[in-house]
Image (cartoon, rainbow over all chains, first blue to last red; front, side, top):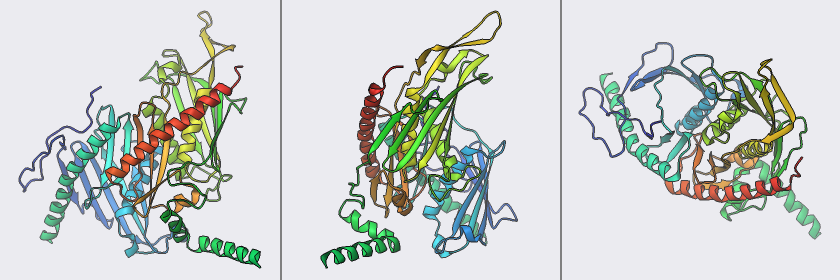
Length: 188
Length: 287
């Protein structure tokens, strides 16, 4: 089994902007994103990284059932559908991870007593045969660790290395977010 | 008169606890302690009882303060998976029945139970606690399936730590009978008189933390503390200091330094739990 701890391919920025520098120990697969591609949801996006792609749709702020209502915040709900088969326990576990991560960053207090539903569909999934896979979610202000999910056995030193690599890689991802949103709003 | 004043003070404190639980907790956290008298890095009293279910191949009951989890392991025969004919199965399931807390309703497993089941399955898979090849009897034909059922009897927070410990203790207690395949009849013959323990390769121990107000970390949160916390973190470590799982499902952010503090606390917790486990195993009289 290969002992790779991070994905391995060149990072190429979206067409239109120049190529971005590659940090040491950080190489991301090419990613692309398309927004507002579905007509029914209030918001939608498709994100592609290498051969992995996910389609997301957001409905909200909408009516919420009285049993699920929170008096001062919006109620966030996440539904994750796998590429094949019916959703199982693993999907439920991932849904909770995504929901808790989004709850930490979404300004739910602006829409009290409403519901925001995020529906995710895995379109294609190209994983990696590695000894351990560590997934982190970092915030852009202070690079703090918001979410972490790991698979496999690893040491503390390897964890620190991966966290540092993730912090460098997240800069590229945030820049990508800013650029794609700028492009979208400059057109309209 | 003095007794009346003390009683009145107690009533006021209890009202404050119900009306403003977060403020009540903050007052204690400022003094670096908690309402139940524990320090921020102190675990509740942990007790473990092994082998209480005689009908199961292995069992363990773990109490972490008030949180009580019982794990029973049953072994059955099955055909090995076609893509791995020399491996057996370990199937965990965490059940949070309405008995343990009023927040759970009867019916299909809720989200909390499913997340806990997936967590235990990940710990078993990542830590390689059992080599699945050890569960194979005859490659391609027969293998053991270990059904690990974890049932929470009393829910007072920190369910993941209790479940991991109960699973480890129960698996150490499992005795499987010797099975031979009769060449003439091609049937399995079980020798109940000759039993052997499982080969437990690593000892994963979980340590859970709750994040308060985005800054303060407390270890082993109770049910009330979990409800007030802004985030949780669970670290599963084995004896060599290797991490099997770093589970942080969202919530407030953590800096690298805080993460390191948690790691060191997890290391000390592992030593405490290992010592307790060894004592219990030694005290079991051999059958």
